[in-house]
Length: 337
Image 1 (cartoon, rainbow, N blue to C red):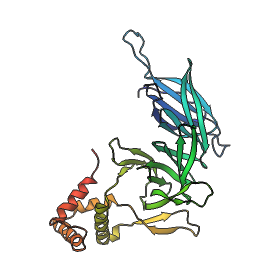
Image 2 (image 1 turned 45 degrees about the vertical axis):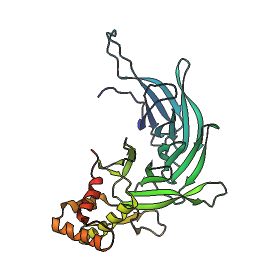
Image 3 (image 1 turned 120 degrees about the horizontal axis):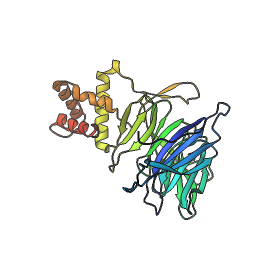
Image 4 (image 1 turned 90 degrees about the horizontal axis):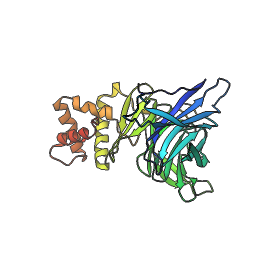
């Protein structure tokens, strides 16, 4: 343990992120909190504490702590998410999206730039360029555009179907991930114009799979086109990554063959907890099950050859060594070192 901060009575940490502000090379730590009271259905008070690393000096006789709190901002609600955004700090306070600058004159102050009412309770934020992806606890996913000239937010697209979104990520400016509270993983993309009178579009659900894990955080790998890492409340972790279309359909067919082989042990159904008629079951689509495909590597070589030959016979492989091709495909899905 390097350092600690003292919280107030009934105060809990709800979010943490690192941020550098425009014109300031310092990497700050922003900590968002909520004052949780039994009498309130949702917190009405919270704080953002901005921590600056202390600059140690060889002339100091007393050892300095690693960080010092340079600003504490009171807000009206729980700070469920914080995110570094274009040299500013972006935050989700209950249902509001807020953007702050850091001013030093000479005291440190977080100054609000703009705000937007984004939903019911905003749980997570991600960004790419001027776009911000908002994960809401009831309204699923919304795509917001930031105008740096007007210093304003505008809704670009939204998911018309409700979902209790826990965490979100942007794979590209048109392809997004969402994990809900029922262990489901969704992929979405911008679709046609919505039925609303504004210019917003719908976010179409193009993929879904039931993982059985309560995923509460996505983190992007540092490499370009790298996987999105996820962590769950149970302590499990894994990753989601994109594959090219030809490899996807080849591995999807392999997954189908393996599902028939291992059918008594496996279930691929997706549970949609928001169906009005009760619980419904819909087959997964748009995702590969990496854990299932990894079992191919543990099969006897003869069985591997048999499944590879089935792919060749059905036209999903055009090489003379379909087994080696599958092994190469699966090696690409192996854990990132």
